[in-house]
Image (tube, rainbow, N blue to C red):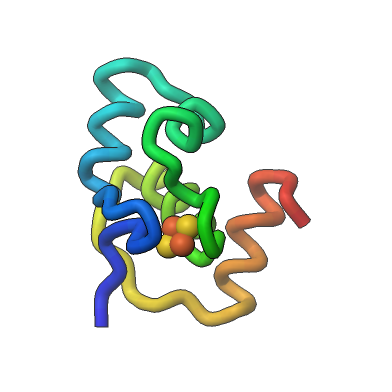
Length: 76
Ligand code: FES
């Protein structure tokens, strides 16, 4: 199974990466513009990983991997 979008707000990581790269939107600005990561929050480590790596499709992260991504973002 692959993860490629925020399902709560139906926004793909490809779209988020495009907004980040083309308009310079930060993570917080992406949240405001699209609503990503403001529903259940499950997508937040995936969105942050998208911005870190430029990849727009991710394998399902285990808890340790998700925690590490959030810690790098200062969110844990
Ligand atoms: S999947 Fe993005 S907020 Fe729920």
